[in-house]
Length: 193
Image 1: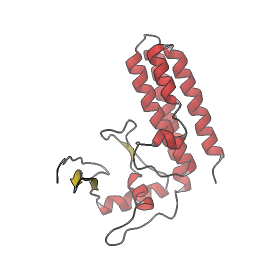
Image 2: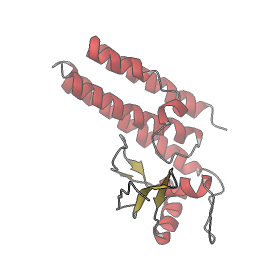
Image 3: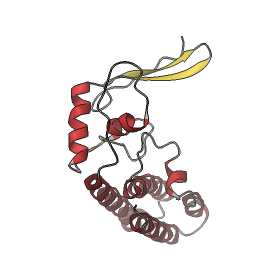
């Protein structure tokens, strides 16, 4: 084994990145009482967002519910959510989209006019991840990390807007991002099964 790293707190109770026989393996520890609590919270449409390294938007507390829904239990038995809870679809979509909108509005009001390209680009990246969470929540699709979030949400075009901040008009890029997020989240909500 090599490359051991770790994290902890909140819904992540610990874990490590390992290399076993040349293969990368993530090990996550979960407190099963916390998992049961977050499952009940998700069914009621309640969640919180926790900061976690390498995640732009943070992680929703329903991440452990997503793990139950899409992963395989290797030993013992765990509760399995039947489907993405309807209440969570609405509350997660609304909260994530509201946060994305507020993040963009702040960037437009405080960074764009002052030419703060780095801060504007950073805010745009965070808002894109937040909007991605909103889209997938509206669709009832579980998220366990942000690695392919923008692709799954149909928001990969935001890359061009980040580039526009570097070369062109910051206010225009942020306004185009606002429109992209608004249209994509609205479309996800209207295509709900």
